Length: 118
Image (cartoon, rainbow, N blue to C red; front, side, top):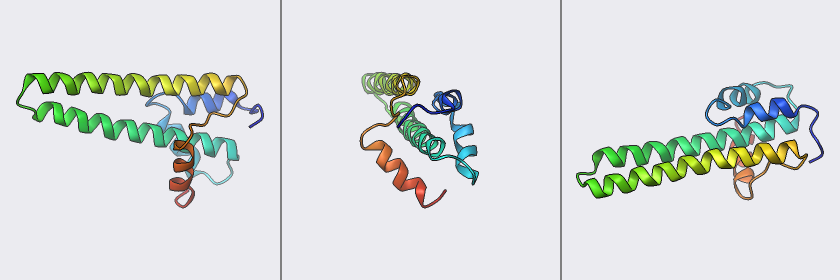
């Protein structure tokens, strides 16, 4: 991917949690460039995956009778959230360097899932 003519807009898509709204807006529109759609798909896939895992771990933490298991799930939840934020930050750095903001495996999955719907 060559340097995008609108890196600021693509950066907004990759803001953790908040970038979901403009990404969904872009995917619902018809006249969007392929760069915008690809980054939007990746952003939505990352955010939804993180949100599902975060919810499951939080639910497990509240349902665990043991304090030890509860703390382990909270710790795992913190690691997962930190990883999500770091991945988004790395993707923003790659975008600003003019490199492709892709994640092997996840970018392909995002394109498969959203290509048929949007």
